[in-house]
Length: 334
Ligand code: P6P
Image (cartoon, rainbow, N blue to C red; front, side, top):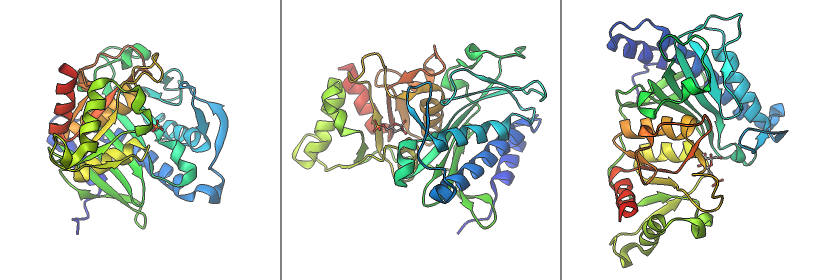
């Protein structure tokens, strides 16, 4: 059972822990939580309210937008633009940053978000989620541009995601461990159900899109071949495989039972350094995974130390159980 502690109470107690906090961060986080509740409702309603299917448009990634991609993006904007905690926002679904409209006050934070990650799964009723990252707006900057967002992941003040699955979960870190909350649909509040989430350092479960195998670099091929060889090979143990094609679902599974998730650099599209985006997928997830005792690397460097060069920059991602990620990194060094 749980203590019934709500996320609002939890965030307020976190704020008290950080001496001198003004409450602005707490209020911002509560507004993001509200956005996730609205999106959870829209996702759960699905076909009943006509939100499935494509929106007939493409996003900056050149990906076909689902209706819920657009709806979720609008929800994040409407829930966060008015309150005076943000100087600007950036989203997977928008080419450039979203400045706070003139009629609203501005604040000292920036957020980046993927409003609906894994949306290719939405029409087939597989879990999707929202990913968000909170940064400080650089001192003295009142009209931020995209370059003010280009801060390494180590500068994040918060990383979080909502998972719209059998339960709607919210997972976040502010640098003091990882906490998981379950949405009580009857009360309309997220309840602390998974305090201090930690990732086992070892695992026998790997997640990767095997259809890309012929495009992988040697170190990744070697690692996966060894997993497939199982107890007949050098690893002396059998492995299991998962691929949900929804990063939020993979990361949540890894937080609860360990595992390694890989979307590595591949030669499928040499112009892309990877598939996942640094600012609103790899960095927030990397912050969470590291705070839970795991690791998050490109194979060649710690994701959170990358100096971003573009708002929608893609990076290879290898994250999860520390000892397995370190093995893959070691193979890249050989
Ligand atoms: P593929 C979803 O589109 C996403 O960005 C991640 O959530 C997921 O892990 C990955 O892409 C799935 O990619 O190539 O397997 O469809």
